[in-house]
Length: 150
Image (cartoon, rainbow, N blue to C red; front, side, top):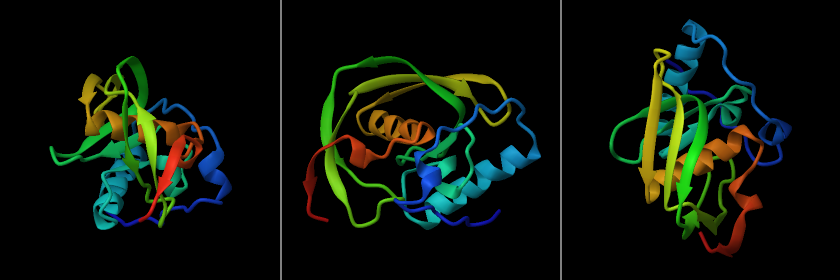
């Protein structure tokens, strides 16, 4: 396991669209482990592969209920809306209010390649939406309705 460098706003890789993962090999498993280690070390709750310089569709999260790794995540259902303050490990020193779904269902693959369906409400829905945005080159600052002091 290794701590990887977190890319910061202004790095062009953060604005690129990530590629689907076709084969879950040892390199992908190592990437997922490194991403979790990096996220925990930075005291974050989520991290997407582009944030560590890899244009692959993989996200990791832990909102306090244990680690979640999703490969090729796709939202299949959203409901409601919530407006809360967000920040980002790639945009240090900034926070703002962002509108996200209150509930989201995301399908993808786990680290073993099995299909999974994650249902997220509240904070988990926000984190899932935020991290999936990274896979399409979108930062939370693109969706801020109002900045707040950090």
